[in-house]
Amino acid sequence: MEVYKTFAIESARSLPKLPDEHPCSKVHGHSFKITLTVEGEIDQATGFVMDFSDIDSAFRPIHEIIDHAYLNDIKGLEDPSSENLCRWIWKQLSPSLKGLKQIEIKETESTGCIYKGR
Image (cartoon, rainbow, N blue to C red; front, side, top):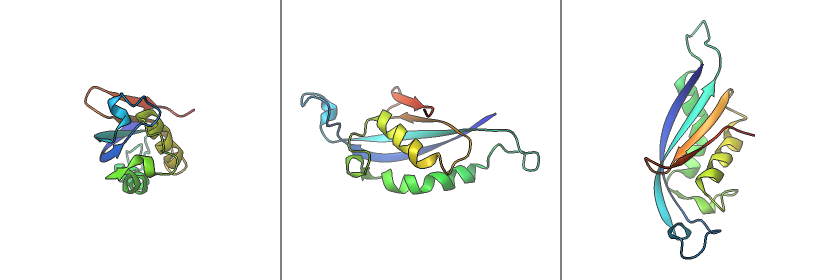
């Protein structure tokens, strides 16, 4: 079974590998929605795959780093495309969030990406 929790962050970025004419090469902001999906068996004692507060606790240190931040200034996010942000979050989160199955980042209602690890 899968459970998920969605978080909202506000961040700014620029995408330095794009041509100067591309609008995303300039500093701009997003109201990102980040959904973490965890997979596992239902614990018979709790009835949960995972308590949502455990997902909150695992993501909190990352949230504190990326929320209201200029993502390019964060080590490892010098090119903070949504795809690279997904992979960066996975690298930070997977050691502490057992059963992490995928991370979805929506930068708008109609655009985003999903990362499922390697």
